[in-house]
Image (tube, rainbow over all chains, first blue to last red):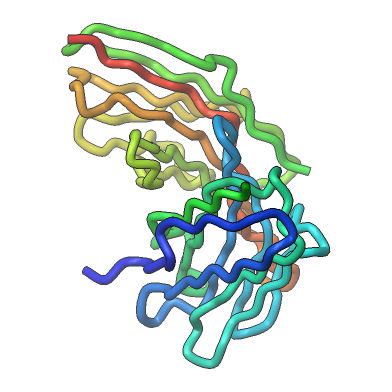
Length: 115
Length: 119
């Protein structure tokens, strides 16, 4: 079965650079969530989109922005990168209104290292 | 705001033993979902088991079962006949089910319990 696809798997950037992370949800899933998991930490919710509109916002820095496109894929743009941004970034998707029967499906994550 | 608490940062048990991971949560909502996710060294997030708050019957998935105590806001995970492949970080998680208009449907995770299954 198709899963959530994230690219790239690994990304190394220098401080103050920009990074773009991509997420391709499971087909027919219209809701996308982004999570950030620092080393040894629990995943922290960043932002979510439903039908291409932002639906909820968590602890996402102002330096980050995200959007969901017409094909439902989403991109997380991160500017002025800081060392503390080094983390595993998860994308998850779900079909709207059906989460209890089809819980969030997570991608394998993008590991961002800022040097 | 909802919170999820896992009071056991790390646990170790022998292979084939039974182990119980604790989780408590705090919410004023009446309708919600609870999950246990497994994160092995590969760092994938894998759903282990799911419980709907309106269901009194405890969820079971093969060797994994939960003890859901709604009044006590407790949601523990029991792993029976533990296997080496069960070694992982386990996250307890909460999601509000009544999220039609405000879309407050993000999952909130506990801090996790690192489980080691010893040969």
